[in-house]
View: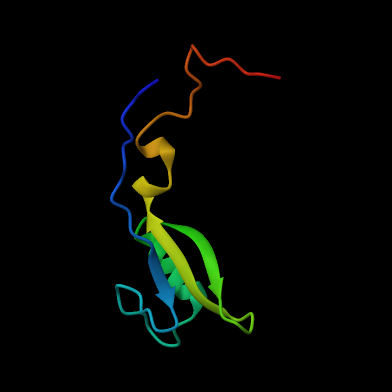
Length: 85
């Protein structure tokens, strides 16, 4: 369709060991608390990061515009779409 590629300026946000959350959390700081905080700030959880020993090390988040197509588009199939089976 020869359309220009639209790129969002998206940064991954690591929260965890050595990467504190953007807002202070009451101790004890846990991954559950960090996750809840980021979700409450409308960030989207992408995936966990584990260290070399298989322990949870960080959580990766991104802004909603960078991960949820419904925010900038529509989930409805366009009229011209043809499903190939």
